Image (cartoon, rainbow, N blue to C red; front, side, top):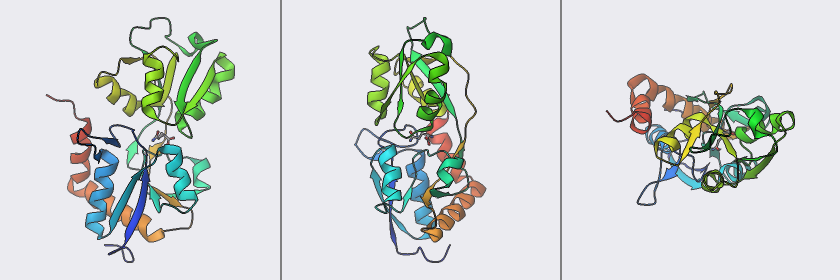
Length: 232
Ligand code: GLN
């Protein structure tokens, strides 16, 4: 156990819906890979967590404004964010990909987005990526705060495509959200737990120690399998 965290309660900010990393189950409780990870790390390291599902951008802002101690939200470790946050060891490899409505055969490449509108999440890497190629391919990018609105825009035909992280897209498609993937995965970054730069160093250390122990004894893999392993 890392010293300085025992008996403390840390406010941990997360996204509202970023399944399978965080989402509400049928009983309305927050669940998912990130939630299981932080709860188990807290248990092992002897601290408590007060998890607040604020939305992705709001979660980052809660940490930068000091209203939360840490964020776990499938948050990609990027150089730009390292200016503001200190990150844990990476715990999951990810990256951005595009999805379109399953019955839409008119879009099979970024070229086909010309003149169209795409959606992505406010503050997320999917948004940054979409914006980075929008001029080149002549499409408009609309930022939305919540995954459910973002996905329904595509399902209803209001937006031509969504840019999001590929494990999340794949999970949603498996759950039958009516979308499909038509383009390759883009280069991506790994997810990390983050605290405000220079703040809560013992929380970050405790996260890393807890994660490392869970990776060694198989608990980490069991959590991943619980949410991602295809049923036999
Ligand atoms: N991994 C992406 C990012 O960090 C998206 C995270 C999310 O939507 N919760 O920007």
